[in-house]
Image 1 (spheres, one colour):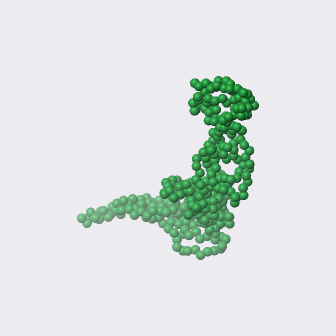
Image 2 (cartoon, one colour):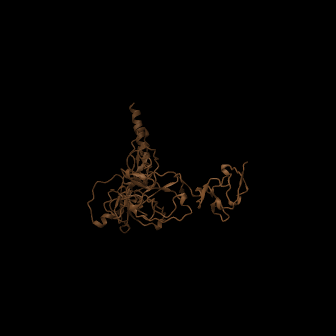
Image 3 (tube, one colour):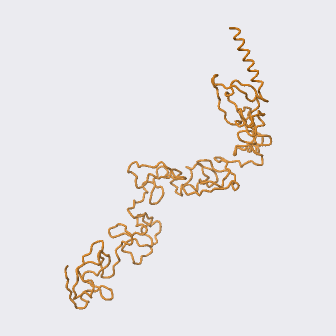
Length: 405
């Protein structure tokens, strides 16, 4: 038994010696190359490295770089400070990770630097300082601007598609694509902040208006609670929000006529079909009713305080006698003196003209869809040769006979 144990120990030692003798420069043998919490390669330098603690049976024997060295892309072990970059920054090297000398301290002078170092940290190479905006090491003359409160650094302040100022809130913002060489570096307001008129960055919700509406603020842009559905109970509201949208401030609802947020008691009337809201129904220069069609319409200019708010017919519509708004082309003709409107001027059983007096008059029955609307002479009148309607007694003294069919 003792001989077996001794033989095993000797073989293990010999194997270790043989294995170790195969190490390259700055390598060392490890019975568990896949364990630990530190970087093994230059590519891991400055990045978080997960801790791996495998079971003994899962360990992989092999060679790792000795302390102070990391494996380069060509497979050799090189000093840590000779790795081409740290955290992807070619101007950084392995170090404490505190970055005490920054672009900001370059202006203020030396600052106290804590001694506590980060695991797998980086530091700027000699001659470089840390730019907190760009999160990389730069030459002092390459420092970006120092951003103020609620600002962040941007590589392209003159490009993008989002609102930058309170004045743009709730309005279409053009998408500006800039080639990298045309970009201007600088500071912009951080996410959820916009630049106010005084130049500071304030929360979107604190902007004085949204879409030029002082009763609106930054929001989803769906305006689900409106004057039309107020007090009708909950209404379904889509979850999809608009880019750079607005919503009514607390206590306000959306007035679809005025396209703005108002207090519930300030809601305008709900307009009917083919109607639109007007801030001044008693002013204007256009015909509002079918009865005005073809006649001179006075231009009424009202002072704002004298205007009456309400609903008028939409563009291309006029109000009919029954109060509804109908297309202009459907308005009955405006009849002249001694004329009346008829839904079927091409049908009927009566004489229409003086020339028909004393002659048989056929009774013409027309299907409704074939009727022509227009004006005919009123009762007791007939159309003279000059087109006017005159009393029957002024026509030539003829009599006429009606023939029924």
